[in-house]
Structures are given as structure tokens and as C-alpha cells.
Amino acid sequence: MKVPRNFASVENFVYRSGYPTPANFPFLEQLSLRTVVSLTPEEPSAQLLGFCAATHARSVHIPVERFADDVAMTPAVVTQVLELIIQPESHPLLLHCLDGENVVGMVVLCLRRLQNYALPAQVSEFCRFACEGKLIDAERDFLDAFRDEVTIPAVVPQWLWRGERHQTHPTLMLQHAPGGEVGGGAADKWDSGAPEPVVRGRGGETAERLPWEQSSTLAALDLAPTIARPTT
Image (cartoon, rainbow, N blue to C red; front, side, top):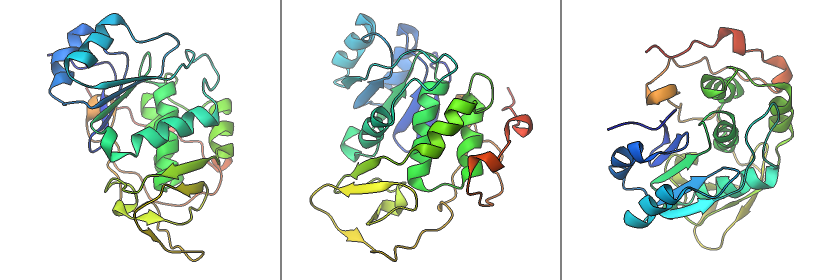
């Protein structure tokens, strides 16, 4: 069985990759996917749509242009994808773009912000998959400015805030769907992104954890030269 290009596990029952081909379908079938999100310029191929139909997976196409030295999505599109990812009823979910690099990487980067990961860890994971191995200026600006309102479902996955809904967030605006309990208040307490994540490289292998120092702005970070590529 052939694994899709740049395939990796993001969280339990959430996966990322490049564009799935028929050679990848036997592998993907083992994941029992419920949702396949395609961030691509064109509609999914007939083969991919056929795979989704045969495996009873929902195909969601969100038009996104090919990455070309700029962020290919608006904040509203990223928020739309995040709201799909954090819905347990969408899992198992595969998120893919054309190559599994910067487009999918930007969504995962913003997901880590929603999870409240320390900034060095957010950027390090992105750089492991980015085509140039670093955040370009446009991507840095996008992440710094990303403050959209995210709708939180009544039930959240265990990997999001340990399965508990928060009323507020340190950097993002939250809107809560009806139902479920919302903890905290103006004094909501947040830690430095705990539980500490496992950063995964290309192919899903575990990479070395980074220090959990805090940094308030992307301008203070210049991680690209020090990012260790996963061994093969």
C-alpha cells in the first residue's frame, strides 16, 4: 500500500496529506474516513469522488488556489476548515491540498493557535512541511493577524482543550454552538498549550520536542535555519 505524499497524523482521527491518488486508496480505506476535505483549485477528481462514495465518506471541496509565494486562503476560509476539523462527527477526517505543504500547513498552523500551542511549536511543525522549510513574510503576517471568530461545537474532541469548552481564548474570538457546557469566564485560565503535543514530521514520524518557551510575536522567531528535517 502506498501512503499519500506528505501524509501525517495531526491529531487522533485527523490526518493531512497531499492529493490522494488511486494508488493511495487502499491505505486510506484502512482509516475509515468519514470526511475528506479538498483544498484545491479544481473539484476533486472522479477517482477521488468515487473513492469517497464507495467508502461512504463525505467529500468537501473548498476552492483554494495553488500556493505561489503568498497565502492562498482568506481568514474566513481557514476558519471554515477549522470548524470542520473540530467537529467530532466529521472524524476520521483527511485534509489535503495539492502537495500537502503550505496550504494544508497554514490550516494546521491556525489549528495549533486555536489549541493554544506555544508559538515556537506552531512554527516548527509548519516548517517541517513547508516547501521552503520556513514561514515566508506573507505567512508570518497572516498568522499574526489571524483573529477570526471560531464557532465551537457543543462537544469538542479530547485533544482540543482536554475536551472542555472555554468561554474565552487568549488570541481568538469564540462563538459557542448551542448545547454543552462552557467553562470559565473572564478569568479563564490557559496554560502554555498543554497537553504537550507530539510534533510529527513528513510521514508521521515523531520529531524531537521543542522547548516550551513563550514568545509573543512572530517577529521574535527565526526558526527556519535551525529546523531539523526528519530522518529517512
